[in-house]
Image (cartoon, rainbow, N blue to C red):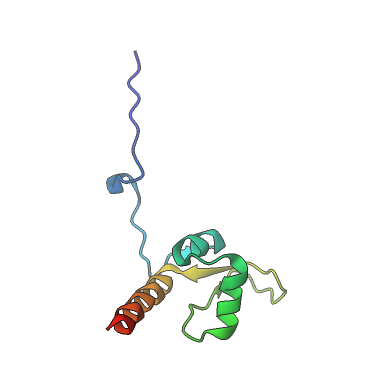
Length: 90
């Protein structure tokens, strides 16, 4: 009989360490973290100077060229939004 063990998604010992300052995330993760869909993310980039800027993943300047965001910058932006909520509530 074979014993099959599985690790759950919450088991942090099974995941490799990722430094948020050097971890790049793509649009699906941005959508999950910010709660925005792709069009709103790109609108925020244009209209909100505090919104995290993407990192180009190629030398192409063409529309649709691959980009990613630095996880730490996105997390910082989310924390700032939470802090603004707390200030507005006072």
